Image 1 (tube, rainbow over the protein chains, first blue to last red):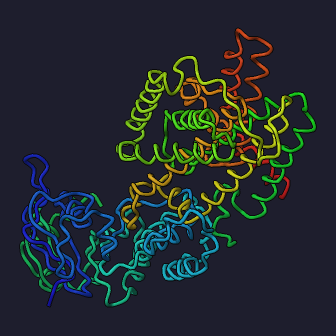
Image 2: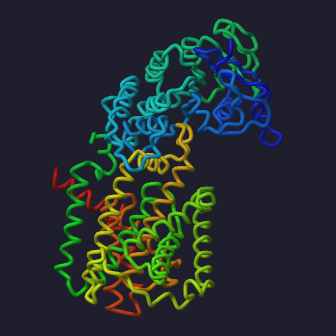
Image 3: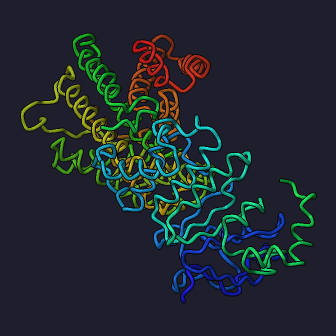
Length: 252
Length: 325
């Protein structure tokens, strides 16, 4: 079966430093694929390379068999590869609803129109409200994003990405910075996403990883050290040693 | 109109736009009767308001700074003057011609302007404006160089209304241009494109991650903004029957940045009022003290930062909310 997202010998080098070093990744369609690894392992750099905000030094990236290595970030989004950010990247001065409406209008190529009323586009607004309802933000729709509690902003990150109608969604630490009580709620929402949507997510909390993923890749020093099911990973000695064993030293 | 835009400074809510804008328009018309001796000044104020609104589309709505916006204003002025001198002196024809020339030049320049960040953009726009200035200075056969372009006639407006000595036609003409460009730009900023422009202002980094063609948006913004600035310049040239190098100059570029900030970036009523206030103040101060008027202007500008942070627009918003609360 064609992988939803795959890389071949993907490398990102900064000078002599190999942040990502020959990664071969295969994410099958509909997967809940977790990317774990100690701090500085290159997880976020890998995500940047996958989404196109960084150009890889070597190797290639494909989604559903189509090579996208040379495509811009924008064009990858248009082919169905969306992401959320570890640090919120929201439109803070706009309303919560407009954040999602904007993503919908960009997806539908409506934003070139400067002669039409945005507010009159009922379809876009109705759809935006559906996305907000999915992440339980309906009561906040008309608030400015900057006035929103942090946990809700994390959910809006997801709603904006969903509004691009992705086939593959990459979540970079979707629960970063929220208390564990709320990170549960965020992962419940992620779990509720349609089964045919392919998910690749970075997460530090191992209990969340084992609960919500069906496949795990462990990245260490820019390389995939081991890949397997949650059961395989949890019983892997090297993972225990390198990752779980050093949990006490972990900043989080 | 849905409530989705209610949070954008309160300004775009339906009642807000109609209320404050109507006051602005009514005040503009009333000035004709209140200050019949000063129609020439009022005409210049409308020109400044249109120019300020054109710049605010970039800075206020798109968050893109420019230190060379007078280039488009001056291009429009010269385009209208040069066209009138060839004999095609219908004012509306000149207006359209100026808008097209300025918009096209803006479009051609976008590839170099949209690159980089705010700081590089300041340098690039400054550099481009200097080049345009120097070109106009050198091309004496076309622009009259440092002497400017006098000696052209403008045909009656709509073939009916002569541009009279008292400046009545000029007032009505410039007010009409202001009102129409205001409504046009209001549509632009409340359109899907306007939403994308505010998206760029709020978070340019997220935009490509939602599939947004950012450079294309910036190109459209520059083209529209340049075209409207050209219209402002054309009205000034037509009503004063003169085009000169200072219309292209750095002073005017810097001034419009001040005006937009004083008025309140992204707030169309605030920017309009700010432009009128600035132009009026400049006139009053230069009458009081031809020597030290810039000192007075500087003091007022500095005070405005303390008194009206966020510009006149945010003052207006506060007044309105207090009343409705």
